[in-house]
Length: 364
Image (cartoon, rainbow, N blue to C red; front, side, top):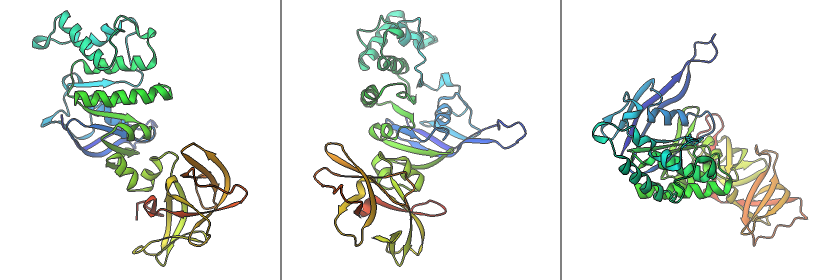
């Protein structure tokens, strides 16, 4: 099912009774979600991603704009008639019901020509339970399940009606690191097997990048960038996107362009052909550093520590013009760092360095 959002906007009254200013949670959201794709809505807390999900579901009415499922305008259609499956952050399972009863619950509310017999409901529940690998646990209650199993029950319950669209609101946030990794792989597998258009909300950029076909990065209700995960990582449109994606985070320096050269302090680090003289932010991905023995045309940093990670080495350093607490440079483990030296020299990989306008923070 293709989803089209046209100028989608949601405003809430101000919590300050003396203020008449409205809070804009989602602002002019335009996007076409292709049929059968998994979309990651990504951003910090309060950026509007969950509000956007609730607008898609029909739990909230938009202040402005339109929502289309295929060619059908569903903007004013009640949630129960949209054919949407919703997986909540806290699972929202019925504690007194078995796994079977939790999964079949949405089917019990079907009426008219859609009404099913008890045997048909159980058969559908068993089919979807196999899909999420819950068969054998159907007689248990939620309290007898692990967190990952409870999450799979919530997904099964959302899938049992075979919805046109599956919406997931931070479904992995309550799981530990190992379960989170396992469950996100399960979500990706289930989505591919069912082919249901899925929108997945998270503030964890690693989750979004690992399983999404497309990611939407949001800030303060405004879409910052839409694209394939690797494309957004490699070509961020602004400073916010570059800082939000990546672990360890990107290293941001106060710099300048002068005579088509990029300067960080007294170091000339790159060419900047065609860019006029100005102050800039110089953002360098951790993997964009190359350890050098020369001081010329390199970035000089002060060594703090070397963290061995097996395949790679994380060099922790400092620089007075870096806004990060420390610089983290990821280099191959075969590179030997002279820990006796107080200074390090780095050449920079051009494709891992981004220049941003000092005022607008847009990419140059």
